[in-house]
Image (cartoon, rainbow, N blue to C red):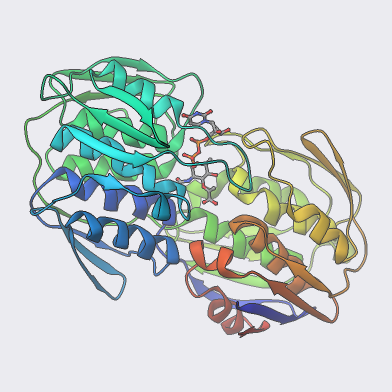
Amino acid sequence: MDKLRIEGERPLHGDVQISGAKNAALPLMAASLLTDQPVVLLNAPELMDVRTLSQLLTGMGMQVDRGEERIRLQADRITVCEAPYERVKTMRASVLVLGPLVARFGHARVSLPGGCAIGARPVDQHIKGLQLMGAQVQVEHGDIVASVPRGRLKGARISTDMITVTGTENLMMAAALAEGETVIENAAQEPEVADLAAMLVKMGARIEGAGSSRIRIQGVERLRGAEHVTVPDRIEAGTFLCAAVATRGDVTLRRCVPEHLDALLDKLREAGARITTGANWVRVQADAMPGGRARAVSVRTSEYPGFPTDMQAQFMAVNCLAMGAAHLTETIFENRFMHVQELVRLGANIAIEGNTCVVQGVERLSGATVMATDLRASAGLVIAGLAAEGTTVIERIYHLDRGYAGMEHKLAALGARIARVS
Ligand code: EPU
């Protein structure tokens, strides 16, 4: 199993190009099931999760051709409408095939995702929405088994009990081919939802309001192929910003969307970093922060446009070395503090109180061997390792490979001493 070895305490300097978003690419790929014509994704990130979904789709009969940052998908010969447990257990986002399969083929069998490292993560809202659209859905032998007795889903008004990102995406894709109007209330407003809607519209879907809490979809009978550029990854971007601040460096992100980073940028300014932005770039200067260190800054995670739960671990790493104490409250997932014990191994001072971590900044972290437990936790450990004195070894780095494209190469180009060891 691969590990990362980092020699820390080297400020990051230079430019880094941000890849397409994992959490946009996955629903965009699933959306290709909605048409028999080719869908071409550009700026597609080179990630393990993208490969896992490619394999799942290929297993259904989809033609998937991958080039550099480009994927062509064509679902003109789908033979199996199933997502087996072997795939779903490695990547919960596999559940995104459920809506498109039910909408286009009238049936689907998708393994019910189990709990995962960060929480229970049920998919009851995905199921409830499809039932409101007329699907019959049961759980049989651990699989979600869905069918549409009347042949075509019917538009419905769906108000989800909580804001769910992939739930909104699944239902929006299903509604695109349903008969009549669907209104999704309490919809997720994440940029990845809006990006999916933008591609669906190119495919001929009639969708209004994506990116707000109410999405209106007028179903159409068929969708066509499209070419689409995946939105930049705001979480990858945020991870590099936090790495720059933790190492007191000066980094410019290229090919990103600054407004998607607003909540984080505000917090980094509060911490003492100087932030400048242009149309598609962000520069963070943390090499001359007042007092020579970041100030502790508290956050509470919430749905977009709030502070993302996917940035909580990385922002915690910044706070580990800050002046003062910060409260980091996690409101989206019930078990997303697995990185805390590992950060403590690096010398951080963190106490967990319910869903809040109290981080008392220390002057120095010291390198150690730590274990990655999930994707964003791994990113938090990488940042802490970059800032710590001495050598940090991060084990189980496959978690990082799921969602970051060539992270160690990008960090090395910014001056980090980082190497992958098998
Ligand atoms: N929830 C339910 N029932 C549902 C759906 C969600 O109870 O039917 C709960 C979840 O358990 C959670 C909350 O609602 O407590 C929000 O979950 P959501 O459905 O929004 O999460 P998701 O769609 O499964 C996506 C991202 C996650 C990201 C979350 C929150 C993708 C592929 N995944 O997950 O990304 O953390 O939204 O923003 O888009 C990551 O990239 O590391 C990652 C975990």
